Each structure stands twice: as C-alpha cells, then as structure tokens.
Length: 229
Image (cartoon, rainbow, N blue to C red; front, side, top):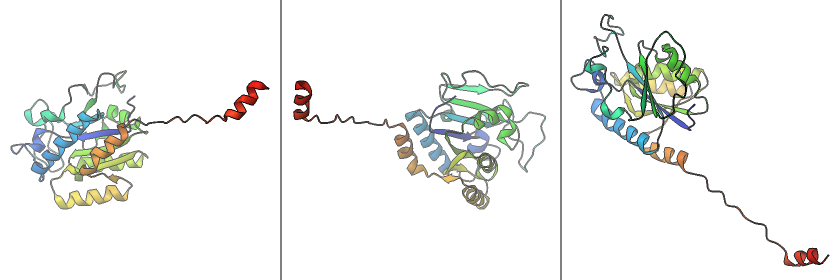
C-alpha cells in the first residue's frame, strides 16, 4: 500500500476534453491546462502518488449525459495528454476479477483506471484502491467539476475519507454549475486547496523532522562523590 500523506486523484485529463478540436472541450480549457501542468510538475518534484481516471466508452455505446460521442476506446480523444502520464505507471484494466495486482505501487507512482460510467467508483478495482487510502488526504483535480469530480468527492466524503480539491485545476463546461458543485463539496466537508498553496503543502509533507538530542548536564560534584563513595 502507498504510504504518503497526500494522493492526487487525476480525473479525465484527456484530449476530447482538453483539446480545442476535442468532442466536448471544457469552457476553461486554456487556464486549466496551465494549472494542470503545474500540478503534474509538483507531483514529479515531490514524488507524489497519482490515481488517474480515464473516461472510456465502447464504439457501440450510445451517448449519455447529454454529451455527443466522446472518449471512444482506441481513439485519440480517449488518450490522456502526454504530460499527465508519469514514466512509472500501471494501467489496471477492468475484467471479471475484483482483485488488484499485488504490490500495486511497487515501481509505480501512477495507477490508471478506466471509467465506464459517470461514477468512477463503479469500477470495483478503483473503488477498492481508494477505499484503502484512509490515512491519506485525497486531492481531486481534472475534468469535470460539475460531474465526475463532484460525484467522486461526495461519495468519498460520505465514506469518511479526507478529501480536498484544487478549484483552479478543475475543468467545467458550465461555470455556474461548476461553482455550485464547488460550494456543495465544501458544505459536505471537502477542503478547497488553492494552487498557490500546493507547493508549500507538499514541501511540508516531505520535509524530514529534525530531532535534537540534548544530553543532561552532569553535576561534577555529584560525579566525584559517586566515584569516591
């Protein structure tokens, strides 16, 4: 199991949402890309573990949630942006087994799961992994604030996990609905962690504790008595 104070939860950072020619690009795409680059740079600097969700739909699947067809399996639109992929990563495929690979984090700093439905935790393997991270603060960011991020944050908070999100690094299609989602997550106990505060937060988490050992002063007169006596 990963042992770290913070785990980053990267939601749907894919071409169909973040490319101007994508199927359904978010409204705040340009600013979001700058902020996402900063978060991934920080993750590399401070060696933070990342759990990534990839929206993925089959070719014969009907569009849902009022969106046109997007993130079709095997297409460019489904792919994650290159800077969102760490070199040491593991892609966990959905299959008939509910078991996670042994030593999941050994040699890996990013675990990637498919998200077939609106709820990331409908993937039982992702559900199992996130449920194990009770000692960590889960920091959510990515796409889309009023949909996937809101659903996941509320579900994790309902389970008693520590949840934060980075508002500047959350993409939305509707600004008003995104703001409502932000307020709802905070109202339910989620922490709003701003981008400018992230580096100091991570730095403090990885800074080693310095323990000073003070030796007791020895009374030389008592020593002499002990030796003599």
